[in-house]
Length: 127
Picture (cartoon, rainbow, N blue to C red):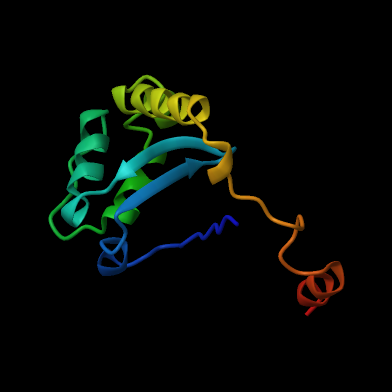
């Protein structure tokens, strides 16, 4: 099963607990995917190397990256930037290799489409 979680406006301390980040913009396009680095240094370096203003001392990296994605001073569409990066090319190659070398015995299957019956799902949604 896949679990998706979103976190809105995390503090610097909470954001630093994450090892990896999949940052999506409106429309579901990927802006960044990868390790954030110690104190978000990899994420900050990535954004700064693609036109973002330098992060100010004490600024929250989570808030800063969101501001920079929308900044009129950086007219680049960061999703367009991402698909031109070496990281994106390596990810695509890695995913292709995984698809081509799948071992059928290791495939994860589930007896049902949903983890909970329809009645329970409906009850939870209507709470």
